[in-house]
Amino acid sequence: SADDGLAIAQQLIVTTPEFHTTNVVESTDQPRSDGGGFPQQTGKPYKALIYILFGGGCDSYNMLTPYTCSNGLYESYKDIRQHVAISKEHLLPISASGQVCSEFGIHPALSTAKSLYDDGDLLFFANTGTLSQSITKEEFYENSSIHTRLFAHNTMTLDTERLDPNDDISRTGILGRMADVLSRKGYNTASFAIERNSVALQGKPGVSKASVTIGINGLPNVYLDPGVDDVFTMLHNKTEFSSGIFGDTWSTSLIDSVANNKLLHKAIDSLDSTTTTARFPTSTFGSSLETVARMIASREKRGVDVDIFHVVLTRFDTHKRNNEQLEDRFKDVNNSLRAFVKEMKTMNLWNDVTLIQTSEFGRTLTPNGSGTDHGWGGNYMLMGGSVKGRQVLGEYPAVFTTDGPLTLHRGRMIPSTPWEAPFQGIAAWLGIEASDMLEVCPNLDNFNSSYLIDPERIFHKVKSPPPTPEIPRFPSNAGTSSEASFRSASLITFALSLGAALLLFLQR
Image 1 (cartoon, rainbow, N blue to C red):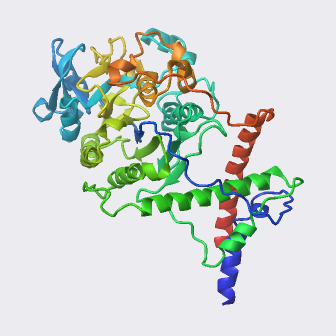
Image 2: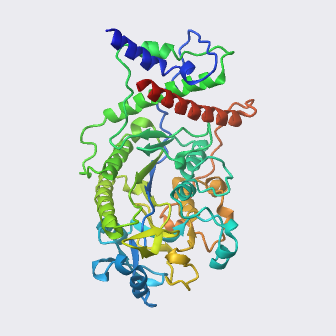
């Protein structure tokens, strides 16, 4: 019908470079390349990193509490936390050495974490957080310019995921920089954001492959009416040399995106329906980890050496009903992790997978009503078959009262371990050499050895492979190609935003 034809025409129009840019577009009769298929396998051992953000600021001093401490720290914890403190009889005790406590308590809803800890597959990083440099309590109050932007969700999430407080490698994130280094060293890398994109996955333009955002239940479909594929391809043919870069960049990005989506669908759809055998919760987090497991199962079809995943679990901003909300969140975490670990062990990949749990900040030790407020340092989990578990690394605070050397107003803790410590270890485990570590963690030199942790204390096998030749990503005569690529990436972002806005307008 005429209405159907009009709808198809509108679909096609909103894909065109003319719709999204102000360039003159002069097309040729040559179809645009879609970038080909998946890369050939290199033979390198497979590894996967799963970055899990507890969005909202997790109350991690109720995730890992004092338990048996020679200085009476558990009693101090009860006094300061008041009605949000967890009774000792409900906690799951674990042993530790080299800390103020010989035993710590894990939140009662996290029995999977306790089992992994006891099995030697999980460790905790104590009192960890974003730092631009080492800082004392006195320096904090005397010079506000030497600490990062604190206590706000947006700024501290950005700082946690970028891990570049001085903007040394602009607009990149910790995971994207890892992918960049590995790609240059000849690794086939792939990066995926589950449900929502993240700056953590952003690398330098043109170095590693751009991240792909997929839904909690898998890849989204590209919806085009049957019979218009040829017309869609023709609208994005190669352009004449005189055509503008904006339109050309848009078409290249769109064709590559659609082609990659089809390739990934083909890889996932070819898996047996029983590929994942564990029963995952149907929650957002459970479904996200099941999707991660299915993507890992397709690793050989995708020819990938290193997969990097970014997963978010929200609703940790517990300004009220702190303990009830934390119980609810942790039950979901516990059941989802149990299924994921079982799945990785069934695939015989548990030793090749590492999960790092983060949050933008911890929370105040002192309650505000039934909840807690935004804090700073917190306690976090690292788990996997290659992790040297059954230990608490960093320095758990020995004093919670306001006269303690790390305690700020309202029980906010100055971190004693920067995020650079765990991520330096993770980078080494992935195969990144010491000579490239400052690219991954640009702020690393601002901390002496007392703040950092030897990667060999974190993982069983982290010996870096011998150096391999750099793989050129641009022609030798490209001149300022990285700058041009950065401009192209910025234009893509602008074009996508503009297109989305116009599409919403047309739908009204």
